[in-house]
Every structure is written in C-alpha cells, then in structure tokens.
Length: 367
Image (cartoon, rainbow, N blue to C red; front, side):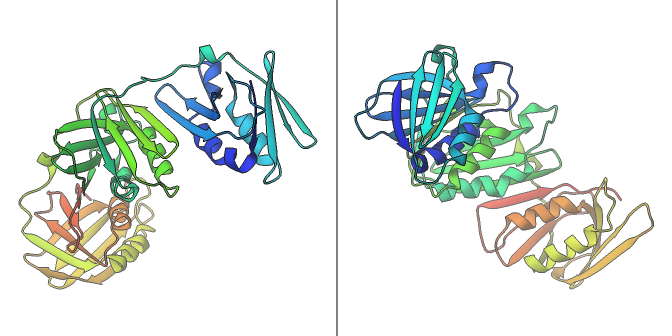
C-alpha cells in the first residue's frame, strides 16, 4: 500500500476518527486506525466496538498502490500534528511496518493486519430521515446534560430518540430531572424508540459542531447511523426500555412564576456558592411578585437573593438542587423563563413561554 496526501486534508478527518478510539483497549488492534486505499479514495476507520467512525477522502496523483493495514491512531495523529502546515505526507507499507515520510522527516510505525480489525454492521436497516444539523444539534444541546452517568439503571446512561409522525424527539433523564426537546422533520411516518448511549451522543455533538451540511440519520434495530458529508458514524444502541417519561411530567401545576432568565440564573449562581457542596440544595420562597432564594451549609454560612418575578397564587416554599436549575437555565436561550409549580412535594416544569418544543422537569428536594 502506498499513497501521498496533503497534511491539511488528512488532519481533521484523522482527528475525528482518533476521537472514537479508546486509549485503553482489551484488544491491541482497537488502539489502531484502519487505513484503506482503493480507486483514488482513502478510508480511515476507528472503533471501540460500540462506536465506529469512517472518514473517506479523495486521493490525487498516480503514485498510489491499493491495500489496507492498521497503525496506532494516537501516534499517527501526533506525527501529522507535528509536521509543518501544507506539507505533503507519503505513506508506504514495508512488510509489517508503515513508513511515513514528509520532507526530511521519516517515521516507522508498527502495523497489525487489517483482517483483525472488527467492523460493525454493514447495513443499518430501519427508519431513515434527512435532518438539518442545526436541528439535531439543538436537540442534543437541550437535553444531553440530563443523561445519567454510570447509573446502574443502564438505560438512563443515554438519550431516547423517539420518531413520530413528522417529529423527532430527544429525551434524557437521570431520575432526578428530565429534559425533552422536539424538532419538526418531514418524511417520518413510522413510530420508533431507541436509546443512544452516552458516548454516542457526545460523539454526535462533536461531529455536528463542524459546520456540517444536511445529514442523513438511519435508525435501525441495533444501531443508529449518521452520514455527514464524507463521514459515516455508527453507534450501537442501548438494549433496554426507557421509562414512560410522559408520566413524570406534572399535569397539575396551578402556580406560574415568570422571571428574567439571565437575572434568575445569576442569582442562583451566587447563592450556590454557599450551598451544601454535597447536596447543592437551595430554598425558594414565593410570594406576590417576589422570589427569595436561600442557601446554607454545614459551616453555618448563608446566602440570600431576592428576584422580582410575576407570580400570582398561594405562597410556596420549595427546595431544589441548584445545579439542576442552573443547567436548565443555561440550556434555554430566551429572555424569559417560566416555572410551573404544584405544591412543595411536586416536581417543577420549566419552559420558555415564548418558544415551544422544549420542556424540563426538576424534582424537588427536602431541606
């Protein structure tokens, strides 16, 4: 195998592929990137057995020799990063080694057979849709922070993608809070629910942050595949049943609190400084036109803020994890926020009253 490519063409796809590769692997070949040269085309593949990312690049010139091999992903990436900008890099397999040359630089890397490299399913049959990257990115940004981390309820360590009629919905919960966001997508007819694992969601967000064009999303029984330009990303799905999330969204919320989102966010951030570091609890006291936020900690330190709000109804005192409230206010982008409340034992619903499509639920805590 032999080919030559410009550093700038190779660097970004190689970074994306190497991002999937885990530093610690049970199989040595999983620390490698699969390199394939075929008919004026270079393919780079990385996998950790749960995720797979394939980048395809055009090759120019006649000095190509077809073939495939695998080399250490991190070492190859570090070599390419260290070379001068716009340099030409020549790759050639010599026996069980790959020789990388650029200018007066020469590197020899160990290889492992391409036949040892595992691959995920070739075909991901199922519902397929085209979606704007901004739409999918918004769904992820608005919900991903509510995913659980290393929860024994493994089905919470990911994000629910729910396809409905002309609608794609993302839902995430860690059992203490819930985030839900909708996007209108034409052409969806069947109803499907799948759980994308946490690492897959994070990798998706990374891919969508690179000024991607229109993308194709295919939701299969065991995998989800995303095609963005010359990048094909595949992730296994979490085998489990997501909770019936609509049942935890409170229906009886007679109290409505409207406030300036940024003012409330800053006030909560200041009070949080003196909250209990472990439980992060703050007390909200609502009366006519005023929200008082209080926190204290085991060192007998206290913080209090007052925020002007629009509120009619019976007075209420309720406790929340302040980090959960701040996360929601960071995810919203409007100038105003509305809290919909029942009693002191009921979860709060948080929405942007001027924008539909996103909804958050935060459970109360006893203080």
